[in-house]
Length: 251
Length: 240
Image (cartoon, rainbow over all chains, first blue to last red):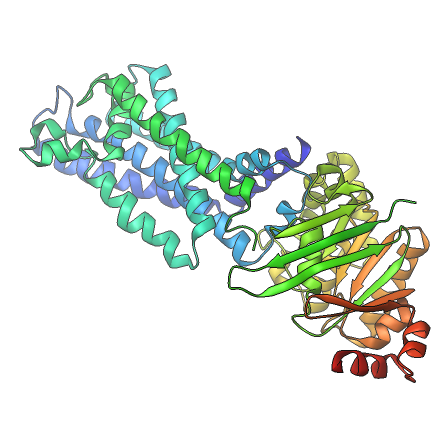
C-alpha cells in the first residue's frame, strides 16, 4: 500500500505545484460565468424552475468545472508521464495494477474537489445558491469525479500527441456540457432537442448536481445518479484493465 | 545458489513484427558484474525491459532471484537506470529520490534518510531543491543512477549509464558502481564502450539479432576469437 500512497501524493503534489493553472484559473473562469451570465444577464431572465437564474446555473457550472478538471488533470499527467517515460518508475515498482490506477486517478480527484469546494464557497455568498440534499450532492460529485478522472486516465494512456488530450476536452466534453443543461432546463427545449438531450451523459451528471443543490431535476434524480454510475464504473474498470494488461503502457 | 537473473526461451515480438528476442536463455549469477554487449537493436534494452516489467513478453520466462520478474518481491529487488533520461519533470532532485523510495515501499523517514545519503554520495546537494528539467546532463545522469540505487536493490541494471557523460563523471560513476558491486550487489551493465565492459565486468555476453552469440570473461572471449582486444572480439563476433 505504501507505493500507492506515494503515487497518490505525487499526483496531488503535481496539482499543488502548478496550482495557478490547475485550480486558480478554472475557478476564476467559472466565477466569471457566474458573474457575467448569472448576475449581469440573469436579472433579465425570469425564474427558472422557481429559482433565480444566477442560482440555477451554479450547479451546472460547478459540475462542468469539476469534470473538466478531473479529465484534464489525469489525461495530461498520464500523457506526460508516458511521453517523458517516467511512468516506467511506477510500472517497474512493486505495486499492483489497481494501486497504480487508483494512484494516478487521485490527482484529478484532488484537483476537482479543490475547484468544487472553492466554487461552492464563492457561489453561496455571491448567488445565495442553497444546498438542499448534501448527501446526494456528495454522491453525484464522487461519481462524476470517478467518471471523468478515469476517462482522463484512459485518454492519457491512448493519446499519441498532446492534441489528442485537448481534442477530447474541446470537441467532446465541453460541447456535451454546454448542451447538457448547464445554462438552461431541457424541459424548455422542443422536439427533437429535448429527446436528444437525454442521450447526453453529461445531462445526467448536471441534473444530479442540480438536484443536490436546488432539489430540482429535469429527470428523476435516481436515474441521474444511476446513469452516471453506469458510466463511471465501466470507464474506471477500463483504466484498470489498461494497467492490468499493460496495453498501450508497455510495448 | 539461486541466480540473480534467469531467462528461459524468452521471446519478444513487437507489434510491428520486429523480433527483438528469440528463445533467449541467460543466467546471471548472484553477485556477478555482468556485461551485455551488442549493436543497436540487438535486444539489450528489450531484455532489460522484460526484467523490469516494462514490456509484455511474447513467451518464455524471466525470474529474479527465483521469483517471477513481474511478482512484487522481484520488482522490489531490481533497480533500473535507463538509457534515456526519464526523470519526473514536476519533482526536485530530493523529491525524485524520496518518491521513488516510496513507490518501492520505503517508509517516509527511511526514504528521506536514504535520499540524503544518495544526494551526498552523488554530489547532488547543491541541486537538491532544483526541479529535474533545470539540471545539467551530468547531474541528470547522476540522479538517474542515484534513483536506481535508492531502494537498495539486489540487482542493479544499468542501461548505458555513461552514455554522453564526460571523462571525469564516467570514472566517478565507475568508482561508485565498483563499490556497489564489492558490497555484494549484482550488476547487469549494457554499454557501447568496450573499454568500460572490459574494465568493469567479470563476464560479458555478446548479443546480436535477439540471440546470445557468446559469453565469457574478457580474457576468455579474446582467446576464443583469437583477438588481441575486446574491440577485435566484438568486430569478429558481429561479423559472423
